[in-house]
Length: 345
Image (cartoon, rainbow, N blue to C red; front, top):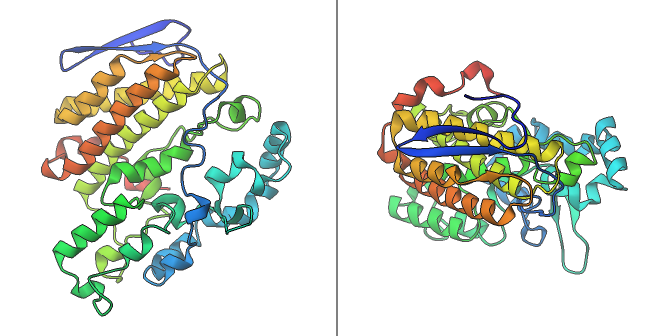
């Protein structure tokens, strides 16, 4: 039986492909790990949005209407942010390592300290561009435009860009992780002492990516901000759940105290695993099965970093493989599980 408010030592079980999945709901908290706190972009490798605008003018215009952009001028003025900063002993929100990793994009020039230059930006989501932006813009030679690029070159270009640090929408699992790295708030002290939320608990990759931040102009040759087709939405839904399970498991791995943070992230991980189980019942995907079997061994308890990080690594591997092979299978069986378009943020 599923319970909404599990207590210390409470266990629930369910069968997945013959394996007994045990979720140990045990209390947790105070974060000693900062994994996921600021991996979005290396300030030394940031080229700024100016490196993207030449080809992505329309996407830039969309970005400038989103909270991701606007927060650069508003977050540090919000009363709630000031309260959290005071509790954490933070003097400057825009200069604090605790805040900048998720709320800002920084640049670090030779001989100077990192400086916040914008809110959540292109590089926050797609990776700091120094090592890949020129590769991404090379369509086969100085005089070759994107419209003249061969399919073979395009595939190699995207692959090489990814190898050099770009998180390309071609791999939806990596894109979901870009969101969830911050939307799981992997900082126990920030939650328990600062009073920050323990993540966006209503987050799902489809709802949060298909509303105000959607910028699919390339799919329509710049004619419109294209909507996403049903099959891709289904892949996004599953990839998002896999990414959520991985990052929630990593957040739980960082828990050291029996307080709000640990309990919340453990419940989140277990709740997401049940959603994945419901998906797996309909599509019987080998990569989902591996992720669920790996999670079945998870002991969601405090100070269990080593085991949970290993399990998160297995979930990550399964997520990457699912995203790489998802196009080969029809996911129409889970169509009824996707959020309605009216719920898009």
